[in-house]
Image (tube, rainbow, N blue to C red; front, side):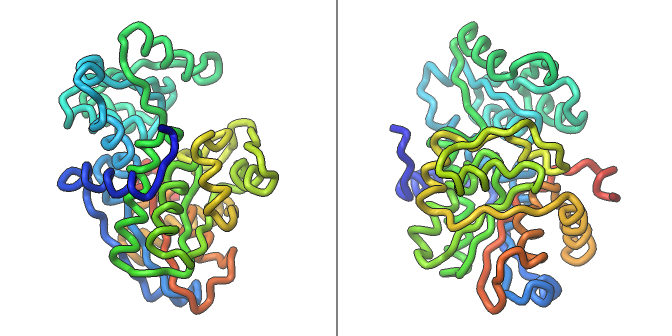
Length: 315
């Protein structure tokens, strides 16, 4: 039941049809010139709730049976997954409880509540969010929807890659940000089916290169919570389900620094007139800084989200 295939991504796409946005694929002459390649930006910053996370959350919740829908969903997140589960639950008329840190960005807390979810706050320095979520599951009979390590979530995220290849045709490279690996695993499955010759590259912050260490060592490596502005990639380890897919289908994991992410945010705002959060800039920053030699190649770049604090955008 935990295996994920391209057929699951096709089924997820059907479930998401008319619900999730089919986000645009943008081009930029300046970006092409800077990278020396033909870049195709899949812009999930235009997705509902502001990020790709809505795809996996909605797909997972849509597969609940009648009893599960009555009792609702539980999730833990400080940002995009929280908002995605809250919105998906509202659309599917079911309750949702989200465990969030008390110091989460006020805008993200407010959005999660506005979507109709109950928010349970915790102290990230003294309490275990997963333990709190499990307690809520037991008390309420609800279903836990983890942020990445779930087959329905992975399949939902894979629709990002499916849509991209349907629009662009085969690509030479696909760059995808990686935190827990749900988006990367799903997109790698789509690439293997729709563009078999495409090299899939994951990108994470230099301060939190657990996926890179894991892929190169052949086993999941756990690290302390990384200090980076890419808050969506502050995971300490990839998933038990996502890692085998990465091992099989991902060519490499590369990293970029926070300064490169800030510069990429400015490029998106000034040159392409779009708002992108730091984590959403990971893949693009790797491409624009030529971390991999992609000269003359056709390249897909997943822009994963746009939920950024306005103050940070000015940085």
